[in-house]
Length: 169
Image (cartoon, rainbow, N blue to C red; front, side, top):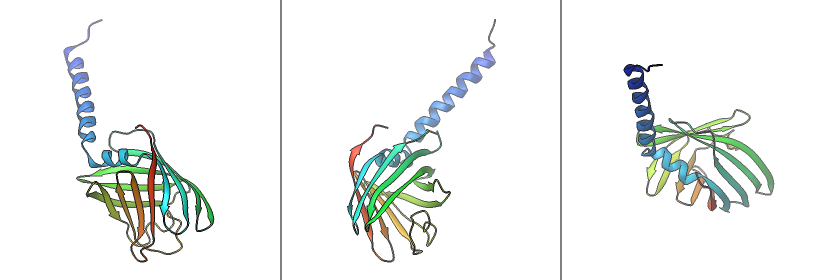
């Protein structure tokens, strides 16, 4: 059985495109952000913030990074437990975070590199249901190596989380 040169060329070209795409994606800021976020976090600041956040890699994709997120513990004396998915999509030198809860509540935040991390602000009320907030406010999301925070732009209320365990990605 003979394999034609054109079939071999097509297969070689296809493999080259796949490897080049993976190599280009590795240089994208959203890939660095995904690696920075994966791990276990404990709440270290905020009103009675006794939350633990677990961020784990999900099914991989060439054009985006996918993570599963579990939030559990207590906040302001209330028991909290919810799961969701975080997708990071490339947007040139920045990235788009898409937070999707199992109930279908979605929140999108465009973020950009700043210092050693990333920062972005939601539009007013766009993430109200996804963040389980009774008040429609803008939220600032900021990451640094080993931590992240959510801050209400209007009230200044801030929830800080520190990484207590890294996960290999």
